[in-house]
Length: 323
Ligand SMILES: Nc1ncnc2c1ncn2[C@@H]1O[C@H](COP(=O)(O)OP(=O)(O)OP(=O)(O)O)[C@@H](O)[C@H]1O
Ligand SMILES: [Mg+2]
Image (cartoon, rainbow, N blue to C red; front, side):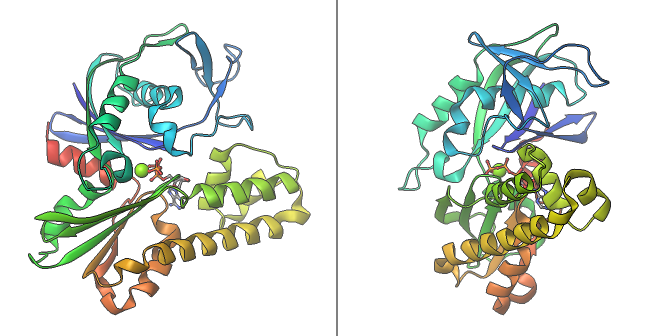
């Protein structure tokens, strides 16, 4: 079975075909070392073993291992994240062929050539055997690697009738990295790539975590991310912030971190002012869309955030590769 997998450092996005119908699922990365006690609570426990090391899936632990760094692509955690996403997709454990992704800046060398070394390193990493305590895992038989970001707009460029001399800037803001590329025409060529592994949503996550700690609400990155998404939902805000007197502090911290992130993105992409179109993808897209629209206001409606920006890459790869 073919499974398309945008295995980002914060979340794994899966897509596959079943009777010509495209299915998708999303799994957040939140693991810690050691195993959990079995059989407590309603949810299944996922205790893993990889090369003799024990890990467990834990959504709320403040000891969850940080995955938001570029080396993540070649670590134990990446293998676990992919297996965990497969196990939670609703599919039965079976033999699978995977198409996974690498950030543009890892996939290509500085000279815009495929970085075979990184690609092989990623494949070798994913072929390692994982054990699930008291359970069966998927067998990964074959791995292919595609670049992140750019394929997300394949179909959209055609739909928008992009002319052969037009240049489109694709901005992908993920948990860890800002990945961008410039596409000429309807993918006639790629004229520039640029990655910045210092800029990602994790900046906002970390600011939120620090503020939450001050509000006696030490928690995991995953919960902090959920708060960022639901910052305008008072009920959710009350659930995660224990010290009510610090609510304003936490929310203000999040807003200023978003503003700072937006400013860094716009600043980092100053060299791309002259493109003809801008497409925004990645989970962080909703956080920066306004700032990007302002910075490229001369393009008007040609600045577009993709529908469901977090999953548009994996959807597009699935459509491109077909069943
Ligand atoms: N609607 C939303 N509003 C704000 N943030 C969001 C939204 N949806 C997702 N995010 C955040 O986006 C981040 C994940 O984005 P994405 O899945 O693109 O990252 P990734 O691919 O795992 O990271 P990278 O590409 O850097 O390795 C998470 O921090 C998540 O909380
Ligand atoms: Mg990504």
